[in-house]
Image 1: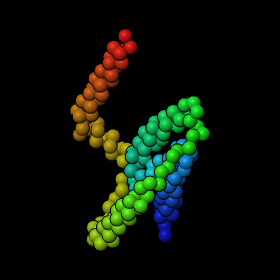
Image 2 (image 1 turned 180 degrees about the vertical axis):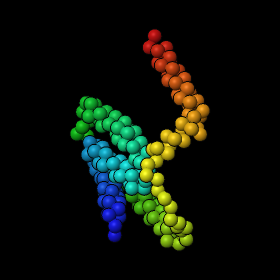
Image 3 (image 1 turned 30 degrees about the vertical axis):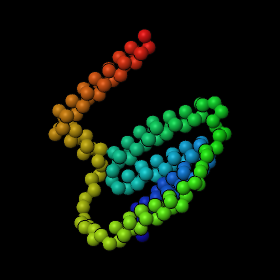
Image 4 (image 1 turned 90 degrees about the vertical axis):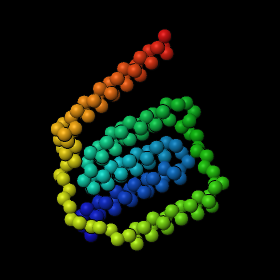
Length: 165
């Protein structure tokens, strides 16, 4: 077992354990903070896979944007910090059967498929490769998307301004 295997299993355990806490805890604050560790674990797995751009996007978009917005929304809302989430066990048996069937199907696919494995080279950084492609081969599309996003931003600002007046 190599060092990378140990780190992978560490990130996998963090991700699965914190995701389990997210779906089983009754306190929404604990669930939100466990979701933070889930997102960081997924970002760590992305780094191990050589997808550093995806890891950075994972941290910036999900941790920096969505999760912080969710936690601030929960914490700043009055009388919701001590509210327990209602977890119903009405459909527990059908859900367990569905999960078992899905687990069996995925396991059989993993075991009985003849996976093609070739040695490949992982680039040192994917961010450099993506940046080089965006600014050389796809520069026209990149600039057109920038203009399109600017038009969407101006349109959203104008709609918000009209609704205010």
